[in-house]
Length: 385
Image (cartoon, rainbow, N blue to C red; front, side, top):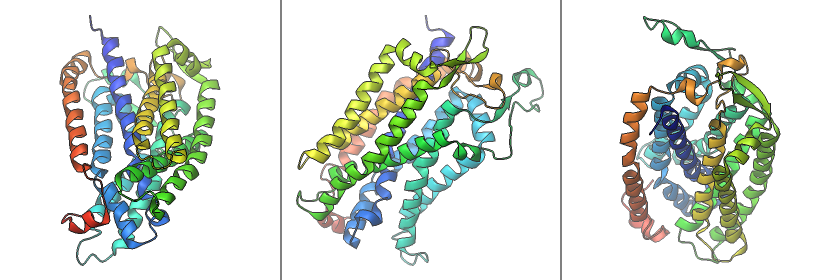
């Protein structure tokens, strides 16, 4: 029998999976940060922009779907974080809006800002989008300053305030937590690694071409800070006090909570380890194997699996996935922040269509990339960025 608790865990899995896919798709942002660094000629910059331009809708749509799934399944998180920490979410949204505007208007005849300025918008989104998303996800482990009045949800009239932010920073305080910054930097450099791997796979540059050599070198350059920050954050998470939820719903600090979660959820631990190995395999084969262009697939899949595992240990096994630093008992858990059993049940039936949607995305991706991208093909393409 499917219980309410199983439905909560199922939807946390789906939200976590979307989060993992989103981080993989941040290769668009990562590649865009390299427009001026790796694109030393106008032709090379045009290749980079049009290569990512073929995929940016996937990232943007997944971001919106991730937020929508959170809203539908865990509305109290949505109202608390998106309604209280609105400055950090507005900055994230601004960067992605600038991205959409840049792709749409950079090649329009008569644009007053010029193509270079719109490309700088892409670089801005590439730098700040992944970094801010990493800082926001860091609050799942390090907490945020909010309070929740659970009694207000039972009051009639709908005028009671359920959650409030405990300071005037409204989310910007996440940018001053050093461990949030570490995760943000890790996600930023991971997106750059993924971006270089994607461009290596997507652009039909000869093995001895300067662009191909620069892409392979860039993978190595960005892998070093990524690994340093990622390992530091994982070490912090595994050794920190976590937010355990007792049988009566009371939240309490417990030593090595997230390490315990990994050990008590062996399937998630295996998922995490497999993901890490795949990430390193894709990076290593690209750097050390001459002519290898498929590193994006193992690293991309590994990224999705690793992020999925990290988010799962954040919410499963009686853990508060959005802890409050202002009032520990206001921390959000799967049980106290989810939608009704009826809503989760109905949405679960709808979620059965997800494999068909994913199959369509795979087919669309394959159709777009059947021939790769070269300067000759770009010159014949009527719709280019």
